[in-house]
Length: 307
Image (tube, rainbow, N blue to C red):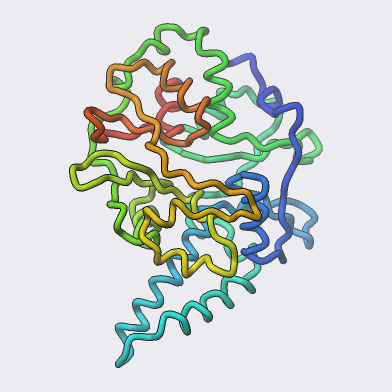
């Protein structure tokens, strides 16, 4: 890895998808959905450069804040505010707010750029738990943007080269993840409850468990793409099970009620990398007898390999 440069991780068919600072949040949400991506850089027209990211966690943050404001209005008023009336107001704010104002609202999406000639070991440090960047922009010697490298792309590279570190690849999952209380929610709760839990717990996705504590699904920030501007807030008040069955036909989104991908504690890191890449997922649950005992994020995997 010391001899591989950042530039070598940029896909040969890379195409930069971006947004302008003046675009509205629904426009950017549609852009993310149509291209099946989690984030876009924002072009600063005044300074003629990219200088911010907006991702789905930022959009979830706004949805959660507006939902919490409804609870506050109810608490301070002598009556419960009609949901239809409040949702109409929320939608107006959501529809008109320039996306630039939303950049890094989640405080987990800072702007960082790196030179294309740096060794990828420098990215390993940036993507590890100590820093936990989700993506970085790649620039050439003239500071022109030539690519974006994400944690997912790094995981793909590691999986492609897993045979070059056989001892580590054979390490069991139980040796790199500690048993912990997995952040979870039941399918009868509202989607808004799940998004509030994502924000308050500082995670990007939570497990869905049944009454027996068995893993039956997962809901993440990327699921906010299930709704378009016209129903993004009304959908938030659906039970999670119904929400995850909902898609947007015109954008060809699909329901994902399938059981989350899991690994057993005695499975190898090599097998875990393969499952992450094949299923194009950002977290994998460690489970015993269908009950989640831990979760491995992409940064957990990168941290284990970079040590």
